[in-house]
Image (cartoon, rainbow, N blue to C red):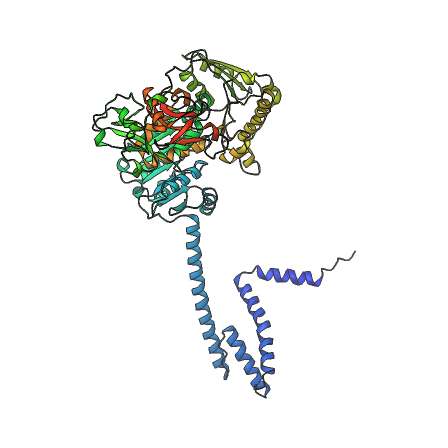
Length: 640
């Protein structure tokens, strides 16, 4: 059988492709032929259609050559062959020079743009905030820093992470929104490398924040980043303050040593567990924490007031109309809600909540107090509590430990989790410690299956805590990456749907405390608008941003957010003023003072489900008058 001939078109195409593989000379040759194939015929048409063109053929060909040379910048001179050749040579030299110059300029600009895109230039600002690392907290931290600098010109936030600079800028712009007068700069590279970290100019920074993340070696990476910071600073002991967070208590000491004397290291899991416990015991408290920690509303400040020195602390509670006093800082030790008779010393600073530092002004409002409206003193009933814990993760043992420390005698916690999530030994070991009468019971079951929850007497629990699984620290590349990262919240959302069904069945609204990993899933949670939702990463980000602006508040927040000691509490308004009595808010503050507490706001029950703030009002003016309902609550700082 005769071999089949290859079509001529295919052979020509193959020959053309083969010539292109020979490199730049072949490309230049083909380009020259293509240009001549277009320019020469077009020039000939122009000459032959020109009425003023020479009559002779030689004259017309010379005119075609001149047009071709001018078009291709080849000289175009006519006359003797040597003259034509020299003109072409000079034109080629000029063309080579210009094209080489353009190429060099283009290459230099391209390399510069690539370097800028990679984020490899050094930040020259001073007093700026440096954020090291990338996690879900970065959007909260940057957003809060932007809010804190909203009234400042020239503020800068520099973010360094081992990610693409353009991708970081796009994500921050999308999730944080307009930056206002604040400039946000992204630099690309590993924060654990001192040479790369120098790009952020850490020695001239105002504060450095080291973000935690969910990798398996997250805490070790935080410590390594802190060591890199020390290596990048000329004098680590006198450098800018550092704020960092670790998950495991075992790494806190090492991180504190690496952070230096001006550093602050938070335990994210311990703080999250304490907030979950507070919300479980006092529904609605997470809304108060959110109001206190962000920069959108009133904030904590430290202030000195010479006119109050020597007077009892209780006098300071009614010495400010537009600010709420919550305690003292004596030396470096915070005293939140101390006894009212505690004298204010010369070196003491007042811890106040105010709209801004310039709104902390003395204005005595003791004359607004109506003692006749005070509710009769009655101790709250100390009945045992019964809580239900659905699911298990690394923070669950900390939650049980926090409950044990503050639970009333006879209290009980029922844990429902799968066998692969928790072992009886974990719960048993926790229960055999010296707890104050807290009984912990483990039940096996999948909390995402209706049958598991149907077997529980849901209506008999005072509060329900829903925990998701820990995110996979390394879900791997590919389409399953995002799915693996979202799995904990997916299980939590399914459990919440089943709880909502049980609420309709029993006719009782359950006080549910939910822990979510991703803040974007908060609108998807089938809960009431004022329900307690703990976004652990966001709360830690808010806390880090607050401390970065005033590191002296770190000890105040640690005391305030602990499950023990003087923390934020929600108490019935009927414990302070008579129901349906109209009176000024100063009366509530004075009534709380009689109980050894500091009132900082209230929650109006009528607005709990409709108002954007869910009825929470922090630091209202003491001149505000309202009729107090029996279902209203007062926000105080005090002991349990």
